[in-house]
Image 1 (cartoon, rainbow, N blue to C red):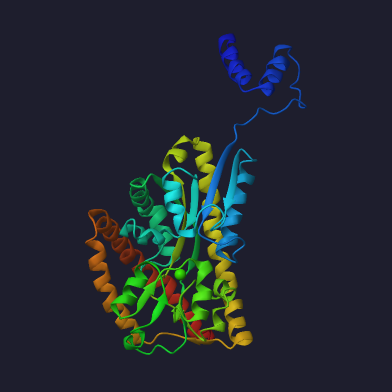
Image 2 (cartoon, protein in one colour):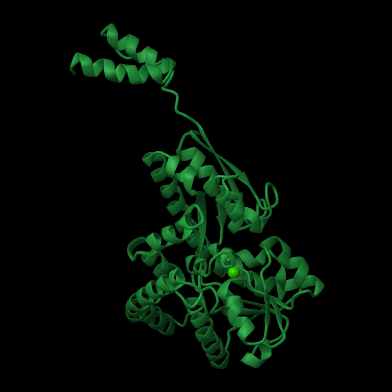
Length: 377
Ligand code: CA
């Protein structure tokens, strides 16, 4: 090493603190590096994360807390995540403004909660008759989806990453059987996102409530029906106490994914290494939550039936057709919202048709035939 280069590097080390001085000293004397010398101090950054889930909320809440802890762990404490569940710093639906304004550095939420801010946010959680989790992941990572998400979030001073997936969500909990589109008329149902808009076209009254408030509204009769996630997450919500008909995979959220949204200025101030570390932690949890849900849904569906007398139903073709007609109207309106929404919808629908054709001919065809031959239903 040239002497000039050495002093340049040593200067950097010295500026880094006492660890730097120890390193300079040992090198100067031509001795072995003193392993007992304190390590170079890393700068510490605090990330206040506000979430839409209550503290220790089974499934979604625990997943968010796991991600928060993982970022701190992977960074060996140099990125110190302070996690605030819904209501601990701000209310569940206030986290977007909290982070967009820079009061906190990041949120963990479902992006479709922000459809009032911009209709295109729906596509970054799930839309009716949309992609499954596997298809959506392919779009985000390899089909240009993340670039569009960045463009949309950037309009609000945010940068978001995927951080959880629940697979195809259950059609919902109802206190009566749903055998036609007519049966949905007048129904007050908790169902957010564009799925709720589809329901409204069929005469239902959709409401968007945070997870922590659904049970009390269902039990009191303020709402007649609700959707949430799927058997594993729903089991702990005790909806079976107020509604006994539970519908299998619905049209409204075929592959819901969650997002961790960062204040864009904060994100831009992170080093490339810190950004890569956070991205890796998010992708790890994104996969883990989906896999955990897949692993536990079967077990908890059986428990709902056996322990609580839940009656599992599937919507018939008439109901699906009614959903389909209503969804067409909803998408026409959604596309008319803005040039950005049209651009996202064009890209989304195009990718879904291409990927969906492959899925139909390989994954779905195989799964259907396997289940038929082995009598799995
Ligand atoms: Ca849901």
